[in-house]
Length: 227
Image (cartoon, rainbow, N blue to C red):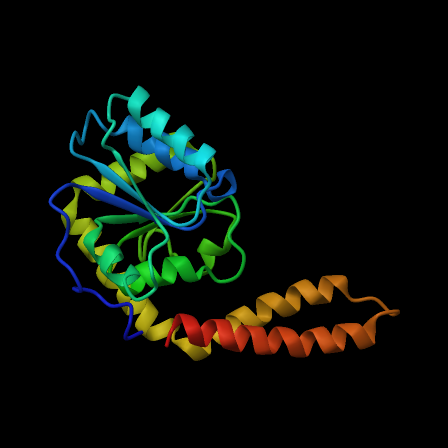
């Protein structure tokens, strides 16, 4: 909680969307870039920060999308950002968007942005729904829906009052509901639900051992994320 907090850096002068995660189709990166490209006429100075690992072909493909939209300076491919520096990057942005098709677990990437007081956009049917309450702590859209994502982004970028309200409520939610112990329990339940689906009469001993491993993994991951 101390690492991710609001006000670490002033907002960018240009309207800025930030994405954090692997630059992959499963993370909705193509949908996000397409949505951002469609908003260039409305927000000529728009920029989209892409933070996370990628390969050269993905970078070239999304850069070509921006060039084709007449916005060669739309994308900022930041690559890997150290965890200590990440909160400042989040605070500088106006909107956090990660339209993943599927996000396992309780959605820590959203919680980090929410802890920084940044309004977030996620997708229905994914782990984002465990932490984003539509219209209260962020916005939810259908996966692979460029039009809905563009509309949600435009809504937040054009209404600073709503963005500030969602950001404040998101931060309050993290403080009240998403401390390390709460997240540890949620992550543990996620791991255990997966294990339960695997459980059979013939491998109960193996599963019992897996339960212990999952509990330790959940504890370590949650405490690392909210140190």
